[in-house]
Amino acid sequence: DVKVTQSSRYLVKRTGEKVFLECVQDMDHENMFWYRQDPGLGLRLIYFSYDVKMKEKGDIPEGYSVSREKKERFSLILESASTNQTSMYLCASSTGDNYGYTFGSGTRLTVV
Amino acid sequence: GNSVTQMEGPVTLSEEAFLTINCTYTATGYPSLFWYVQYPGEGLQLLLKATKADDKGSNKGFEATYRKETTSFHLEKGSVQVSDSAVYFCALSDSGGGADGLTFGKGTHLIIQP
Image (cartoon, rainbow over all chains, first blue to last red):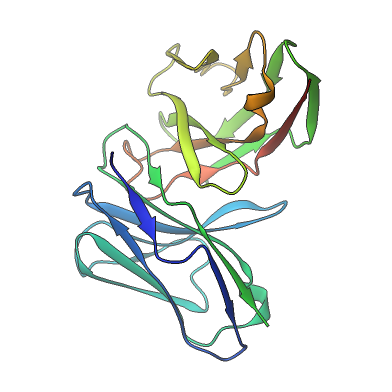
């Protein structure tokens, strides 16, 4: 069964901390994505990557960075966490054809 | 830019009722269209898709037809069950497989009462 695995389901961090959210896929997909999901706003694209060491900004990249050192792993980094980054974070991967995305189960991050 | 508009919920129905969730889109070219479902506490799962005009996607009793003339991709099911309670997202990709990211609607929360 193919999978996208996010390392944590729930995280609580303090304001100003550096936060790493990890995502691993076992499907050999080229493309990987990070979204955040907020009530009333739906899903918004933060960053994506279509190859190792490649990254592209999505719609809301401010306050975030990413790392893709290996094809299967895509990390989202909050350089200095703030309370407005409290959200559900969803990782996804795709092959680039029309089969859609495979999503992880999400990480609910609370910044206090 | 691209956008997806879908009816916001919650939508509350009784079991065995007919379901329609409206979705319209704005995009350049000929996008691919998707419906995703999110059950409580889980990530999103692909429910169905259509890649060209007049295509009908179907899965688990749900259907949606790609209507280019009305830029719509409405989700329907003839008889809903309590287990269909979830949040449903309409999405589009104008880059074929979505290599540049999917554009999502805000989601429709569906509640089915026994």
